[in-house]
Length: 254
Image 1: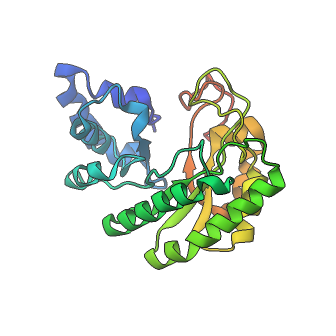
Image 2 (image 1 turned 90 degrees about the vertical axis):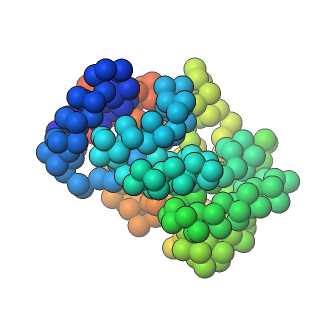
């Protein structure tokens, strides 16, 4: 099975070759995709290459993807037109987060709004973040996150939408979307402890293998250990947040 990567997506936008490639992708789909993974593409990664969102939907569908995620609710009807869904919706950003009470009103309002929208559309999950430390001690930041997430958990349970707290790495500093120095939720166990303290089936972890590998490693063991707390998974190669190929250190074939 050939890898599903950025080159696959971009190759489908190559002018006259598009029809032939798409046709081949559609014909080969049962052999290429074994059906064990619900493939989803993160919208912002491809915005520069696909300014036409409908075209992006067509290419994703041709590759056998089921979702384009972290796209705006205004784009969701276009997803539906192309037989796609949004696996996880965006909300507040990762700078102002639930670890800081001064941002609670802003973040919780955005999360409630997005949970409502997600429930109406059929989007199963909404992303959330601890936020930056801003000199907040880790134990205080964790308690603040627990308080805020408990305030939201009942609403998420009622709407049957899962809030996914993302762990991000703080080591990579060469690109604003490859690492997030100063982010408080930068270790898997720290985030898992928050989720356990909340104790809701609708508050889980966004387990980004790229970030976990950088900060904690031991990825396979952590996936098994925390499987009941994982609501969504992201993948990328390390270093560089690149392809899942033999130029990076994570053995995704396992």
